[in-house]
Amino acid sequence: MPDTLLKVRNLNAWYGESYILHDLNFDVHRGEVVTLLGRNGAGKTTTLKTIMGMLKQHTGSVTFAEKEMLNLTSDEVARSGIVLCPEERGIFSSLSVEENLLLPPVLQAGGMTIHEIYELFPILKERAASRGTHLSGGEQQMLAIARILRTGATLLLLDEPTEGLAPVIIEQIGSILSEIKKRGFTILLVEQNFYFASSIADRHYVIEEGHVIDEIKNTELEQNTEKLKNYLGI
Amino acid sequence: MAELLGMPPQLFFGQLLLGLINGAFYAMLSLGLAIIFGMLQIVNFAHGATYMVGAFGAWMLMNYLGIGFWPALILTPLIVALLGVILERLVLKHLYDLDHLYGMLATFGLALIIEGLFRQAYGISGLPYEIPTQLQGGTNLGFMFLPNYRAFVVLMSIILCFGTWYLIERTKMGMYLRATTENRELVRAFGIKVPRLITATFALGVGLAAFAGVMAAPIYQVNPLMGNNLIIVIFAVVVIGGMGSILGATLAGYLVGLVEGLTKAYYPEASSTVVFILMIIVLIVRPSGLFGKEQ
Ligand SMILES: Nc1ncnc2c1ncn2[C@@H]1O[C@H](COP(=O)(O)OP(=O)(O)O)[C@@H](O)[C@H]1O
Ligand SMILES: [Mg+2]
Image (cartoon, rainbow over all chains, first blue to last red; front, side, top):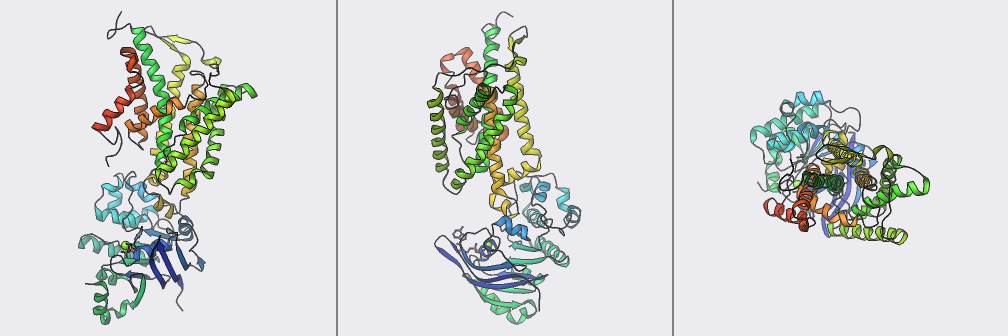
């Protein structure tokens, strides 16, 4: 039996009148990298935000390490050990790179030290005194990932970390995520780039119009390539 | 040096000093207003009333409890900050998700209520408050006479403004404040108790206003309308400095005070409108204010 860290059951969510997530069910096991694949507007970001406690209207259940998360506020979810790297990256322009890095508080033991982070992301050390938003897009994405590694959270929610980046940067991010996985972090990754997803993930869930429509093991990806391309419209 | 820029130096420096004193108060008040706006996204129309309550707090401590200026300078801001916490928890927190207009109307109403209560109780003729004995008298600088208390006000204002700037730009608490101003949801999702941070910020802002009120008590009459007369100028100061800019609010406070002083010296008829002329010029030339970020 795998050790299930995150269990999502019959998750529904709304923005006002619009019904976005329909009875979502999926699991993430400890130490796994799981992706949510799907087209634009499928509900991937909404799923992450709902898990994170950032949305108010929902029903169903999200348990993390056996604890119900769904009615907690987002700061309480964070303190339970989940942290989000948002789609828009959320780099603060009034904070230096180093301040951006130090902003998320250390909430549990076991996170990476600032020294280890600078080793993994040497560019951030070089640019420590710059304003956060003066970095290039790729560097900002590195910063957005780097700063959540300190917190001690064991589950990382990464929302499209490769969006809009050059192939060489995407490759760097891929090797960083592999390294992070080796260190024992569990990752729920939202992606549209399925080549990238397949390079690091263990399993994939396909989301369409707020439903989970398929689950594919990474080892069975080859047989399913055509189906997946069809799902993603590529 | 019988004449300076076309007038006796005594008069010139006298008006300049008056401008500097007013500027010191503008700076202290616009600072608090800017901080509150940044964090709560509320244009706090009750800021002037808070300043007035600060002055009355000092007066009440003195007249009812025999507590003098120095303890009042510490106690009053603390008491007012505590009242601010209650107000924020009870009323303001319900307004954050609504349009700015609700915050403006609610605080405007609050200001009317608070000022009305004090008018009812104390009338509008103004109550005297003594300058503390240690700061009575003055120093003759040769070209002008500098009252000690007024020098003290300017000094305290500079210290306070610098202290607040330091808190926001150089400390961890300030880092959280700046980040929350930019993206409240994300800061909270990182595990920071943002609602508590917002309450603390409001307490700090109103505490600053009350501190200014205590400082004002010995200079201006303690009067229920003293804040009402000031608040519109303070808003102009914040607009000139740049909405949300701490440095801008401070420097614009002094700038406006000095410009007013000089106008009083040269063209007294315009002295109460010059602020708004300045504001309009700034809005035309640099709509985001002197130190505001371009949008
Ligand atoms: N703040 C919002 N208010 C209303 N509808 C929204 C909001 N954010 C997203 N949506 C809608 O929810 C659906 C899912 O969006 P999202 O979760 O961002 O998709 P994805 O991340 O898969 O591209 C879309 O139809 C989008 O238009
Ligand atoms: Mg998205």
